[in-house]
Length: 296
Image (cartoon, rainbow, N blue to C red; front, side, top):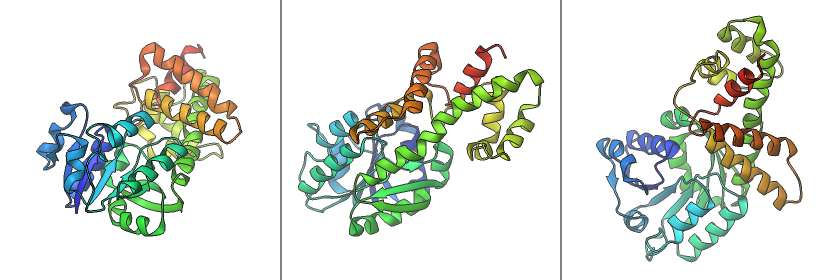
């Protein structure tokens, strides 16, 4: 299948590599050209602009930072929708943004003659690279069926959760407990760090308790390094990326007339960690920062 892919951040690059390995013809675009060389070496072609990306592709996938980036890439002067779309391509947005931003984008795509599905995903760069993401799709039934084969190459499980906007809402919901958990784990470790227990043993043990999250199993080595006060390695989900998601959650809650006090307080702690220079670090670094600064 001829696929155009805009947004070569950590997740976008990993997904594009996966699609190349699955035999698709992939064209890529990114604002920063330096991120495109590894994909070009792997067989991707490079588009000069989002408009060029959309010209011949059957499916256009986007994985972008926020709503402002979506607006620019889709509707800017050289955006995906700036040229006619006589071939009625399918757009799949995999960004984590507000539900209303996806709904507005879907209307613009449909007005331009395209079809639209949102599918934010659960998982970090590791699962993205191996096709083990969890997809949360929103869109019309017929559009989802068009998207299913491509999403199946990227995800171990894809759920069609409702119309456009539903995927964004559920993505924020599944991310919230994890992002708060990193802070909770730091606080928990502050209570027992003085015991000198082996971090790998502790991660295994905590994973067996009723309060242990799945992240302790799927990212065992990363979490053990975090509890040992070591660098957990390259960021799968950075502190600054987490801050963006938490801000989006708080805004989404306000839009439906509710509040997220725990998420809001956790956001403030991530903001503090970013100011200390941890913005590009893996989210597990928050555990290190909190547990070790307490002097426990």
